Length: 115
Image 1 (cartoon, rainbow, N blue to C red):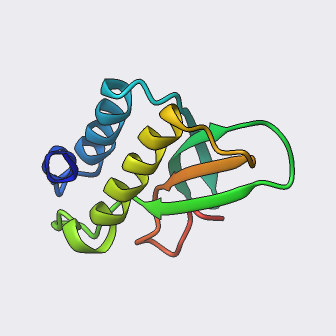
Image 2: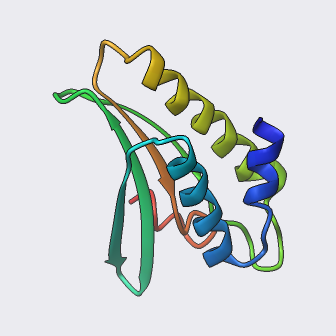
């Protein structure tokens, strides 16, 4: 299953990568929030899966963007696939602590998404 998800995100085009990730989350009925913000001169679209309300929260993240012309299969897509599996597991066994799984954008460009 993780290999299938990796293939669905294996695009050098950032918009296609993001759409592939969103499609995977929707297919598995993983609820998410898409945050579209401008940080300095860069627009970022972070995707947040929240489990349980409250603070403090554990934040687990990976970036879904890649360098221009690269599919980013090893650097970022592999970690994104692991986080997708974690989010799927949380549907069956919700965590006891508040957790955010965050898929960061623009990490390859001065870490803008994780700001």
